[in-house]
Length: 197
Image (cartoon, rainbow, N blue to C red; front, side, top):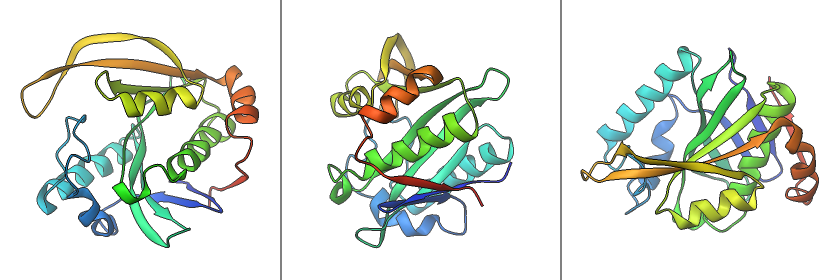
């Protein structure tokens, strides 16, 4: 599985690996950046371990992790990935997304999601993309709902957080047959291209 490069006028997503992750070390140290995630990334050692696991997932074909480059500011902004990929069931999850505070609310995330959804449905031809979020994360829930994803249910107390709290997870999904309408309505102002080379 060759990692794609997903790119439009605003953002460029390339494979996150041990050769480039240090570009986002400072961002990973921002306070409360991943407070609703069970992952720890706020020290260089933690971030390196996080990337090691992402690379392992990539080689086992269960993840495609990306490093995010904001072309508007000409700077690295964070990370995102396809995860829990089931090639047999043609389903994947978009998650482990974090971008620095200065990039939040700048439409960068919407451009990222457009490129990933378009690649998932139009190149990989997946049947479904899922999003799983901590039920306390109201900001991310609103963002996913604005993407046109449908709320499918709540997994109660299924993830152990670093502080010992057992979170409940909201599950959202977009089906392949829903993508054309979502693309035309939610992402109508985004003009994107995909380079898979």
